View 1: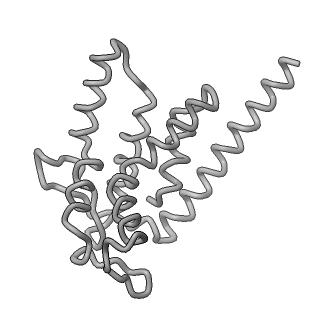
View 2 (view 1 turned 90 degrees about the horizontal axis):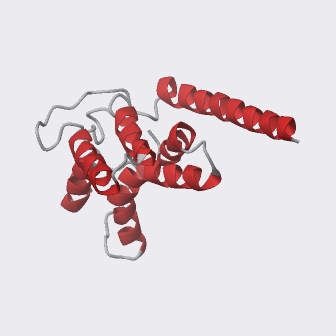
Amino acid sequence: MDVISHGLWGGIAFGRKNRKNYIISFLIGLAPDAFSFGIFMVARMLGFSNVNFAGGHMDQGLVPQYVHILYNITHSLIVFAVIFCLVWFFRKKPYWLLGAWGLHILIDIPSHSFDFFPTPFLWPVSDFMVNGIGWGNPIIFFPNVAILIILYAIFWYKKRKDRLNAA
């Protein structure tokens, strides 16, 4: 899935309580890609990488190894579960906004193909991955956008209705 959609899904799924929770959930939804591809893109912009992607196509073989390692870590349900449980243990209660990270991984499993960064959701326990349909494919992309629009319209309608009823 595209990065912005991940943020939007995280926000609508876990951040509906208030603006602060929304922003945190949105950012946590973006985080797995930001901590892998984002670091690489910033390095490219700063001139630390001379990798050039002709026509916007990113050959996985040209992507530095650290991106693959960070991708494995940030896109693993195992890593997510361990961190979620550690945060729960130290806070003495679950931090549900982290669910946006887990949702990011779950959405990526069917929306990434073997052609480009399949989701290593069982890493480091297993190398098993699903050959999904790439998120740029219209069969994934357009329904994703449509569902997000519908969910946000419902959310904003209910918020507005609640404000009017409270007045």
